[in-house]
Image (cartoon, rainbow over all chains, first blue to last red; front, side, top):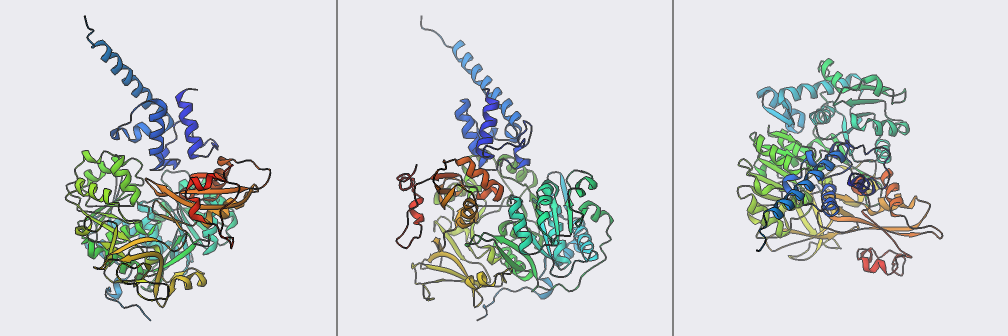
Length: 98
Length: 536
């Protein structure tokens, strides 16, 4: 299962109690729809940090990154790409012992 | 015995709309409301209020009729709320998080005749009004033009639908009522009752204005104040921000959520906000999951917290983060309009956990079982009197009698005073759960869960939660032959209860621990080890 479906399932399971009823479209705003509230978004942050192995900084907790399934998916792809790049850069600059 | 009074307002200034008219006359261009890009001056707000009042009167609204309002905070909400009161009606707040079932219960309980509804909630309301015969008119607050006829078709033919935008564009505002007095009921605010049945707190114009006058006095509010409002107006705390700031001619900056705190902080800086109000969970999020440490709020001069005492740790952190702002911890109840006590900022670090002393115009006593005053440090029930105490519960003399005795409000909160008269809350007389800033009746949730065919018995308790203070746990004993299904229980609750009343945890047990007389030992259910001994 891709992480977009994984996130969607998590939201349906924890905030809609397993019942989607098409309420959760990929572009539906969590804020506007009231699906997630201010404490719910903190649970969501914890979940994606664990599930996607990324670290969300306080600066990144903004609607552009978090306010729909699609925005969240884009944000995670970006974070994971940054993480891989940092990993590659780190290995390229490592000076091997002669 | 009548309560002794110290704080009083002139008779002609006992209604919010009179303050509004005065301000609109003297400073029509001063800003009353900011929301997103919208900026509403006092002159425009007063015009819309008068037009709504005039429309209601022209359409046969009688003095004392109940007008329900179901909307998030917005300039339209404020116009509807004050317009209803100016016309002599009683505004009834319906929480936008309420389920269809809860909306029906409130509408029928106080026989609402007109509902003013933000369009996002029109479908829920259209569903609810099929079983609420008292409703004859619905006024829609449209954020986007959806076409009145499409919305009208959602309602039964006995209900007339119109849009608020049409009212404020076409009504002339000339039909006025001169009969409203300070003693008239201005609003009914529903709270969770210990019986599981919601209770409608009746508040008069004088209740609101005397409480707002006291708050204004200790916060030293003036027309230069701009408060950031993230708390919903449908609760007494949010409503007190509205009343106090319009009373002094200040500005309300509306943000309908604290879900993204950084957005709120940006707005506070941009608008030069001078005040911020929150409940304990607001400050827990602010301190633990926001980038507040990167912000400077040069204009911020006060911060208030109600809905629970502030932990010493949070008090220290907040004082360090906002060294130029005064931090006020406050305590109150809807039955007291909003506020009963406040802790002066200079006492915050000296008296950790205290909710302070009575606000101007309120007297408080800690009373022991037989009605005797408790001594310093002794525990007892907090009893209050003042002009802010409600007139009673709507249509519920029995419940009213339990809390209003000789003009004094028995709060149900157990507290103690230190030798200098500062109050501390130590618990509740009832089993009410305090989650976020909500007082939630376990009974109400238990009744909903008991509707399920699978459930033999259930008990609901509050359990410690880092952000909310308490989260809700339901412990269920199933009937023979049924399988535990947590999600099924939560889905059932979701159809009947507001989101903040949802059990976060559902635990299944073989039996509930009880006393010899059969009463459930709720305190044992708070500890999962005690529950798991019997869990399936």
